[in-house]
Length: 414
Image 1 (tube, rainbow, N blue to C red):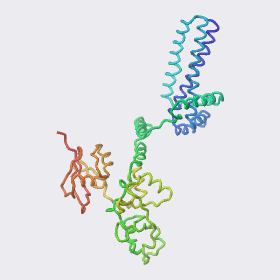
Image 2: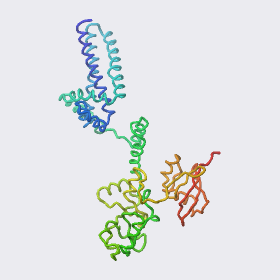
Image 3: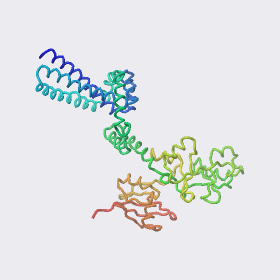
Image 4: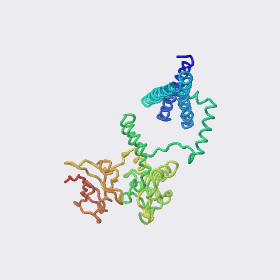
C-alpha cells in the first residue's frame, strides 16, 4: 500500500467516525424531548447544559448536522476513490467505492443510529458537546442557511416542523404506559386533557332538575338553613321561575349580614354569568381560571335554563370524581347483585362506554336516561327495557318523569 492510499484511508476513517457521531447525535436529538433534557440538568454537568442549548431550536440544530453528515460520507468515498484510481485504475476505484459505501452504512448509519435509539439519553449527552462545537463553525451555519434558502425557493413553501396529531400523541402516551415510563393514572390524566377539548358544557353540567336555588325575595335567615343543609358555597337566585335567573348568591356574602336579619337575598346577590350549552369545557375552564365566576348558568338554544356548571364539575372531568363531606348524591354506578351493573339515569353515555368496554349506538343524547327516552319515544314505566348494541337497559326506578335507576345486562349472542 502506497503512502497516498494509506493517507486517503486514514482521512476516510476520520470522516466515517465523524459521520457516525453526527448520525448518533442527530437520531438522539429527534428522540429526546425538551422536558426530558431539562430533567437531566439535575446532574449539573456541561453535557446536559449543551443538550438543552441544542434543543432550544431543534430544527436549526438538525439542518447543519444533516449537511455535515452528508459531507463526511461523500468526502470519505471521494478521497478513497481518487487515491485508488490514481494508482490502481478505475476498476480498483469502483471496488473501493463499494467497500467504503458498505462500511459507511454499517458504521456511520445503522450501528450508531441503532445505539442512539436504544440509549437516547446517553447518546444525546455524549454527542451534545461535540455537536455544539461543530454547530458554532460559522461557515457551516452560513452554508446551511444558503442551501435552506435555495430549497425553500424550489419547494412549495418554507420548511415547517412536522405536525403531530392528537391521535399520535395519545398513541405515544399509551406506548409510554405500556413501557412503564408513566403509570396508568398519569396516562388517564393526559387522555382526559385531550377529551376535555371535545367535551361541551351540556355533557358536564348539573341539569336544571337537580339545581338547588333560592328566591330573590327570601330573607337571609331563611337561606341559612338551606345553606347549612346542602353545603353549597354558591346558589342561583331565581325571580319568577327557574328560567328567570337573576343572580348568584355567594354564601360568604351572608357573613356580612346578621343571622336572623331581614335583608333580602336579592340585595346581596351578585350578577349571574350565562354560557351556552354548546360551549367547549376547556374554553370555559380557561375563563374561570382568569377571574370569571366559578359558577356559570347554562342556557339552551331557546334561552331557557338548561343547568349550571361549576369549576369543580370541570376539574372532575380531568381528575375524576371529587367527593367532599357535603356530597350525598346517589353514585352513578354500582355492581348489581347476581351480576350486571346498576347505573343512574344521569350517567354520561361516554363514561358508561369506557366503564363497560363496549361501544353503544350513537344518538341525540348524552346520558343513559336520554338514551332510554329517545329509544322508547315516551316516558318509560318501571320494568320497560331497551336494547342498544349488546347491552340491555331495564328501568328499575323513576322519580316523577326522571329515570334514577337502570339495570344493565349483556345480551347473549345467538
